Amino acid sequence: MHIPKTTLKASIAFAATALLAVSVSSCAPKGPAEPLRLGIMPDADSLPFLVAEAEGLFGKRGVEVELVSFANAQERDAAVQAGRLDGAVSDVLAAAFLAAGGFDTRITSATDGRYGIAAAPGSGIASAAGLAGRRVGLSTNTIIQYSVDAVVGAAGLAPDAYTAVAIPKMPVRMEMLLAGQVDAAGLPEPFLTTAVERGAALVGTTEQFHIDAAVVVFSEAALNDRLKDVRRLYEAYADAAARINAAPESYRAFLVEKARFPEDAARAYRFVTYRKPTLPPLGQVEAAVSWLAERGLLSKPVDPSGLLDDRAVAAW
Image 1 (cartoon, rainbow, N blue to C red):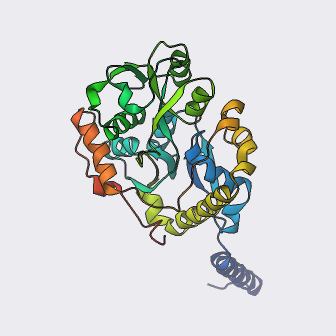
Image 2: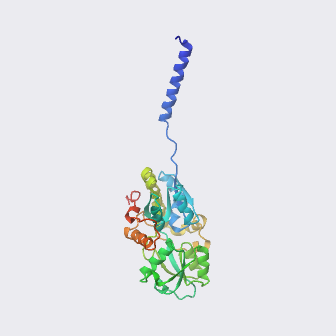
Image 3: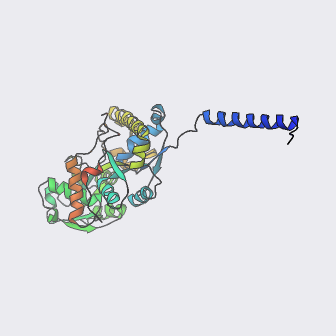
């Protein structure tokens, strides 16, 4: 079969162009990686991440991070389960629930928030030991109840020494406390500081008794596929934590503007001292998992040591 020269030349030219296009395409730089998506809450635990974002510290460390805010833990955990987040500021109980549910999520560090117990104005309760026989408002089977039990246990009381009163909604719980409808209440920040500012008495905190209740979790996939990015995120977190520790007062307005603290809580808030990224002690994770197991709250057994993954913070 005879092929005209003009047609042959055109075919060769087309093939060469196509080959060049493939070659250029294969050598072209890849597009930017998707940002790490981290779920945060309006609390002290999330503050270093918010500062890192506001002050460009993620970019300085070479990682793109998207902070996704949640109003409550239920929405945050649903997003983790749906795979919409790479990681989240969470708590030990939530991490155990995720593991029991078959989600490959690991605790990668402790955080430095504060959970505590405030006593009602005029109750006469001055310490956690004074809660014996009293009514304590809390949300049952949550990190709040666990924190209350851990604090009263550290003060020498048995977990059943007080009467738990289920008040799931945090603002309602605080108002009932201030009205004297319960003797005390378990609260996180900033509700804890707000209650004290409005007349309640602070009788015990997780910070006081060195209880690591709050943690950061990441999916196993993120740790396997993007470990360098997770490490860079933690480097930015450490940078932000150092800045807050060095000049906490300069971040008081930031609490209202970015962390969504009420103004009265922001004025009175006592800043925590943020640690460098580190895992919580295994013993504390074991205590939380045992607390859940004793109450029959886990759908299947959870290995506490299997929840911990130090790959992202091992350098510290």
